[in-house]
Every structure is written in structure tokens, then in C-alpha cells.
Image (cartoon, rainbow over all chains, first blue to last red; front, side, top):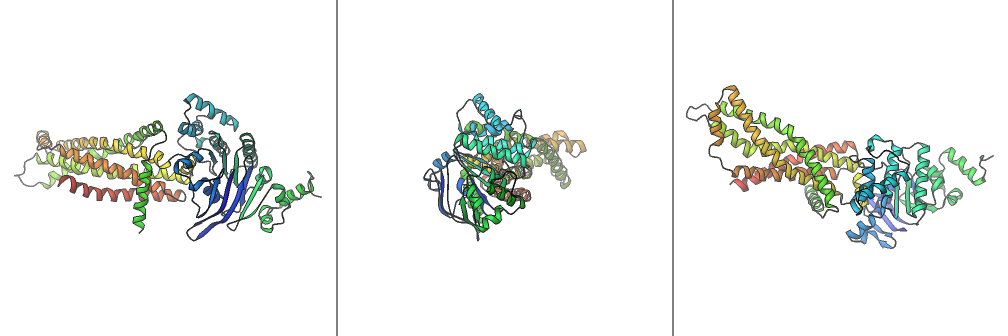
Amino acid sequence: MIEVQGLSKSFGDLQVLSDISAVFKKGRVNQIIGMSGSGKSVLAKCIVGLHKPDEGRVLYEGQSFHEMNEKERRNIRQEIGMLFQGSALFDSLTVLQNVMFPLSMFSDMPKGEMEERAHSCLERVNILDKDDLFPAQISGGMQKRVGIARAIAMNPKYLFCDEPNSGLDPQTSILIDELIKEITDEFGTTTIVITHDMNSVMGIGENIIFIHETRKWWQGTRDELLNSDNAELNEFVFAGSLMRYAKKAMISDDPTGPA
Amino acid sequence: MKLLFHIGRYLLLVKETFSRPERLSLYLKRTVEEMDLLGVKSLGIVALLSVFMGAVITIQTSANIDSAWIPAYVVGFTTRQSAILEFSPTIISLILAGKVGSNIAAEIGSMRVKEQIDALDIMGVNSAGYLILPKIVASMVMNPFLVMISMFLSIFGGWAAGVGTGIVNSVDFIQGIQYDFDPYTVTYALIKTVVFAFIIATVAAYQGYYTRGGTREVGISSTKAVVYSNVVILIANYALTQMLLI
């Protein structure tokens, strides 16, 4: 479990996050949603320690991340898997080497065993026979899947996904979402997904946090979101006519849609 | 104030770079790759420049000697001294600051804007050490070899130009390059080269590591890496000459 308490962050005069408190539960897909530039990614980067918050604390299983010493922080980081918006695969390494990278850095496995583990992670994300290709030689969707394979290579306790569906076609997006959900269920990870893809929210969101005007505006489950009367949340989530239609259909529980 | 901020941040980055590697064998592997990329692949440009540099020194020295009292071997002597003391260590380092420095800044800068450095940090890897240390070691090991090759080729280029154009005969030129040779000049040149290699690798890495933005900023970092490492090399050149030769 990850807990954020009273977290604030600014860059110069620009206040990005104000007094955010939230709990991200284990074995759940926790989603942070909000408009572009609302501070979702900054919040995630504060949680993983890439940004130091101006105020507030981030607790991993009750231990304050920013009060840990460097060694303890490194230990926590080795339990984190992260999928980046642009995949962040290492250009100079092949697909297999990318997935093997955290293993070769931190595990004492022999090379054969590392390859075996990397192959099983790649199989898990349905990437087969692409071992020797470089990231530039595979599609964006495949890069995302290799990113997930790398993120799960060390059996992480915490999985962060920064806009995993951005730039992907709807079918691949659904595939990635399903993969994130399956991995969360299978490994019991505390998963945090930063997204503004409402299909993803409706598909896999279990604990949803809406960031608006630098603050945590709303938090709840998918069902609560559908029935919420929070004006700003509704304006954001159901901005498109398709989403409004889907909401009516889901509330009326009629698969053919509203009358 | 801004200059002090950059110097402070540069020193902190260097300190972080030299912290204990997570996995020494991976660092060594990367160092060997960098030696090839930064050193061996610079051999062509170093060789080309050195030969022509030596040739020009010979022709210019000869053209500026108009007294019959000055012996002919002075052309060879001047070519050797110029190549060993200044042209090979300093000019080649300035050229390498352009080639290798921009390469380092662009590579690390691209990794920064593509979030690959964030990925390393999140995994718990010391990104500064993993990315920069092999480049520093590779440059400090390879650049002295490049400069020694440059010294040899400059003198060879001078001889070829001198003999080829009839400015000086081979015997006089060889007598000149052997005349009053002090091996310490080579030591001095190599000390300078090692210091310059450290400057090139660290200043360029600093520019790349703190790149913010996109591809345009990567380009700007590359340019800054070349300009600043050249400026620091010239200042260090003056300081080292003062310390080591006087």
C-alpha cells in the first residue's frame, strides 16, 4: 500500500499540487485522472521519488520515502516497476536486453536464468520472437508491452503506468489495459495508472482519484464515478457524447443502450 | 550567481558519478564499448588533422625563416616542439571536445528527454554513475593514445610536406626532430591530455544530464557542451602550462 499525506509541489511560482492526500491500495488498479497539465505525472513522480515534494509525505507500507536513507530508497525503488508514457526503453539495447537490464543490474542470477526470466516476461505480454530487435524496430504498442515486461521483470510490489494508452489505437489500448489489470491481480501489486483515457477508467479503474486545479477533487470507485454529481468531474469524464451515452447505458444496465 | 549554481551542480554530479557502482562487470563492459565509440572511432579525424597540422607547421616555419644564419634543422625542431607541446594535446583535445563532447551531450540529453534516465533512477540505478563514469574512464584512457598517435603523425606530416616540397631535406628535418629532445615534454603533453579528457567528458555529460525539454534543447545542450568544454580547456591549458613548465 502507498499513502500520500498532504503532498504539495510547485515549480518556481507555479503551484502544481496542493495538499494531496490519498491511499493507493494493494492488489488494485488505482487511477489518477485529470486534464492535461493538471499535475498527474508530477504526483506520480513525487510518489516514485523523482521529484521531492515541497510539503507532505509519501509512505510505502508506512515508511516515509523521503525520510529514508539512500540505501533504503534504492531498496524500495527495486520493488517499483514503471511503464513510461514513451516506454523509455533503452535505444542501444535489444528487446531482450531491455527486459534483462534490471535483472543483470540487481540479481545474482546466471545469464541463462536471466534470459529465461526475461523470456517468460515477454511471453506474458505476448511478445514473441522479437528478442534481437531494437526498440526503434518495433511498433509503439509493442514498445509499451516490452516496457511492461521490463517493469515486471523484478516481480515488483508497486507498478506505475504513466499514460499507458497514449498514442495507441483503441484495440491496443484495451490490450494494454487488460494486461495491467491481469498483472495487478496475478502479482497483487499496488498499481497506479495515470491516465486521461476514459475508456481505460471505465475498463479497469477500481480506485479513481481526480486531480483538478492542483487539488484532489474527487476519489471513488468506478460505480461511484458513474453516479457522482460532482460537476467538474462530470464535465471532465463525460465531456464526449459517446461517454455520456455510455454512462446512461451503464446506469440503466441495458447493453443495447439508453432508450 | 548562475555561474556558481552551475559549478556547484557540476561538482555534485561529478561526486555522484564516482559513487560505488552497483555492478562493476556491467560498468567495465560499458567502458570498453565507450573506448571504442569515443576513442577508436575518433582515430580517423585525429589522423587526418594531425598530418595536415604538421605539414602546415613545417611550411609556415620554413616560410618565416629568412636568415641564412638559422640552421635548416630548426624546421624539424619547431615542428616537433609545436606538435608535442601544444598542437597535439590542445588542438586535438579541442577537436575531440567537438566530436566526442557533442556526442556525449546529445546521447545523455536524448536519454533525459525520452525519460530513460528517469527509468534508470526508478530502478534504483545510479544513473549518473552508470552513464557518465564509463565515458570519463574511456576518454581518460583513450585520449592519451590518440594524442601520441597525433604527435607521431604531425611530425610525419611535417616531414612529408617538407621533403615533398623541397623546403627542407630529410636529413636536416630528422636532425631537427632529434635535437635537444626532452622526454618531459611528452609527459607534460599527456598530463594535459588526461585533464582535458576529464573536462570534455564531464562538462558534456553535465550539459546532457540536465537537459530539459525536447529535441531542440538536446541540440542546445550539444552546442553548449562544445563551447563550454573548449573554454574550460583553454583556461586549464594556461593553468597547467604555468604549473608544469615554469
